[in-house]
Length: 80
Length: 433
Image (tube, rainbow over all chains, first blue to last red; front, side, top):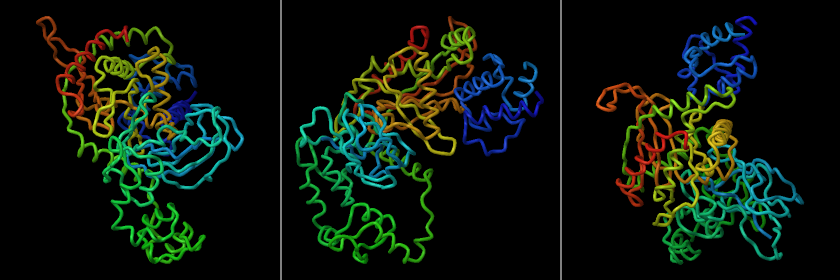
């Protein structure tokens, strides 16, 4: 998978957690919790979605490594 | 025969739009079935039926906006004799002008003045807030005569105008003078189409933008919070809780679980609040007609902020029952549906206390306002690393500041302090939650 493909897949998972963000422009380097007003349950649901879609399991201690979309793409790319 | 009526789903809800029927005449329904969807200030709410039977007739068409208490359908119940009429939706038949209202199933009375559906309908038609009426019936129950005495002065003119309740409401909303409207209905009664027709002839009115759902929700919140601030003598107690044991347990539990079975700390707090309420029942009650009525069940309302703006606090029923895993599943489902605007009527009306977790947004503490007719609210700040003294040593610990806001008419600071102390104790033993 290319980074672009991963980006698309991650955004799709994110839009399932927060449908309202579908039309928002997301800054790849921004902190997603701040930017999209995600709480811990949203993050968990996103991680669950990523696991389902890409078979990448993200342990809790790694949540800090997926804080922005950019970080998340790098993290997933290294584990896919 | 029973009537299924437009329920009251909030303090200021006087009417709702029947958006969709989920049943047709002839269908069998069971208690708890969702049979209609109603558009309210709080979004689209799925309405449950509270009796079992067969739908005899649908009385209101999809798209119609009708006052609270209006019969929507006739339902033949199992024990119906054919003449007996009983309201079917629990909240609807009740005097429920309560904010983000709450009352357990075991607790049939809701907040606000007591009045029959007929009186409520009449009050709505006359546009008289029931709170402004002094009830002369038993326990202050408002009777039709009481309404008459309030409106005697006003009745001479507007009430002689024959007008349907919906048309009256429309006219009021659009600021039209009833005496200037010409009715085309039976006996010259003014109907909705007459109002709408007249509206188009008034310069400026037809161009007025309809109020957005977000704006309506904000108005509903404003009404509930203003009422809470005006009426409830709040007191607050705060406590800092060491979340170390809870977070350690959570980390350990989640490590051995698949991603789909993970828990969040919020679910531990939610369960601990519910369990602590069992020990401090005075806080698990609603304020109705001048007295606190204890709730037999614990239904914690979860304050959920909507990203488009707005706030809802739907109830997680029986929050103190079932496993933590089950509670996690139910919490995820409830929050998702709240965000998607697909809550059920029982969830909108049954909360017995509210939990708000603004700590998720990073703030250290929150001083929340009670949702009437509830008598308490719990606010959680962020879990932050703090220097903490343990066994004479200063060490960093994850600390959460919890605030209890409660109604001083119902409980006092001593009770509140004991509740927070119990909550603390429960969170030190997360494995038992």
